[in-house]
Image (spheres, one colour):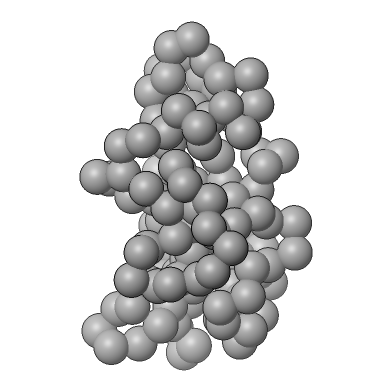
Length: 128
């Protein structure tokens, strides 16, 4: 991935949580947030970037350096459009549970209100 200092929504950038790297037997994930345009409106999304990397990366910086296939984009768990919340359901973070919805909205509401600023504790902007 390529790190950029300037935000351009047309480049589909991500801000990542460098402390959220998770390595499993089959996949490596890194928590991320991003903005997208959906039906003419800007939305704020929370989810993760994923890749299959062998050997496993030592840290988030190595994951980002080696992650070069952006065809799938980020996996979205929750999305806020300024009026409605959408959650991915049981498969990802149980995003229909009230406490998970509250956690997502705690991040997504101010994120969308401060568009295109990066939320605190995230690093960006990263693009493919």
